[in-house]
Amino acid sequence: MTTDKTMLRVLAGETLETPPIWMMRQAGRYLPEYKATRAQAGDFLSLCYNPELAAEVTLQPIRRYGFDAAILFADILLVPQALGADVWFVTGEGPRLSTITSADDFGKLGPVADIDETLSPIYETIKILKSELPAETTLIGFAGAPWTVATYMIAGRGTPDQGPAHALMMENPAVFDALIDRITEATIHYLSAQISAGAEVVKLFDSWAGSLSGEAFLKYSLAPAKRIISALKAKHPNTPIIAFPRGGGDLNIGFAKATGADCIAIDQFTDADWAAKHVQCDGPVQGNLAPGHMVTGGQALVDEVKRIKKAFANGPHIFNLGHGITPDADPDNVQRMIDALRD
Ligand code: CP3
Image (cartoon, rainbow, N blue to C red):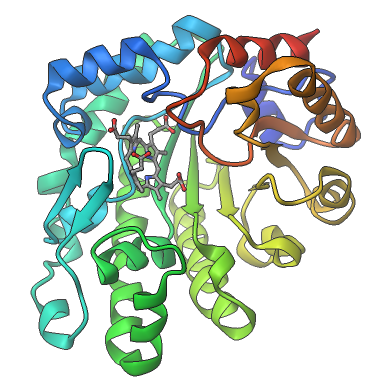
């Protein structure tokens, strides 16, 4: 594959002197232009389902900073909504969903075959972006991993320890497994449609992988990722896939080989030198600046960017944060991060 897109070159295994950079949640509330477009859309979900405005907010951080990749503007909770769950967002609090705690609740979900009735605007957003993005910018599609999506569908909200999902796993494994299975199938369909619409890379966010351990990690984080990735590779062999088993720690070792992922995104709690030795040895990695530096800035930000760049300099690396940028971040610190990296 010959390409000028630095992100795709790194995902194909190249080591670049200046790694490509993008940022989790790069379209978001820290940007005044995002807030203005969201106000125009009415609310967050209306923004996700409005292809013109969703494409606009995807492009905003590209225009402002010239990131090497754009991530589709959407949310991991659109899949539950497409499967028939009620989903809404409470301002200042976060997502709320109808809960799944019994076979009856599970039985109310719709089939995977129907999800495009809800999700087709997302594919429209991708098509708009394909014609509007600069030639050197890579377009990333995404979905939540089954475990992470299930934690929200079971509890009906974000939870500090994913307690309700762990409880269902113990008390009603048949319903829990059926839910993981349904989300897995929906995710294969959804990501495959994103790729067909023009996504050049897809990322699987397992934001709560860190609360699984031992057998449960293998069964509910690793195995669904492997199933999703092998189904996607069968249909779209040339589309790179990034896995993000956030909080996985030691379990990041061998995760790429075991799942078929082309790249592992590393969170900020994982030491970069350790990750270079134990994870990057198997292929490309992405990460892992602590998002707090986008709030605090200063010399510590510059030093950290340089430390991380150096730690990963001997292999393929995509620079990113260890998790999403927060709404209280200073947009100038994002520019400082980019300058320090490209310096
Ligand atoms: O710029 C991008 O990264 C692309 C868009 C994107 C959003 N959510 C937009 C969003 C992506 C990739 C996500 C992923 C997502 N959504 C995850 C996985 C990544 C992670 O952060 O761990 C999760 C767990 C969600 C679920 C979700 N969506 C929560 C818990 C919240 C509320 C917390 C918050 O920040 O408000 C959201 C809302 C959300 N998703 C916002 C954005 C820009 C903020 C909504 C707003 O504008 O008010």
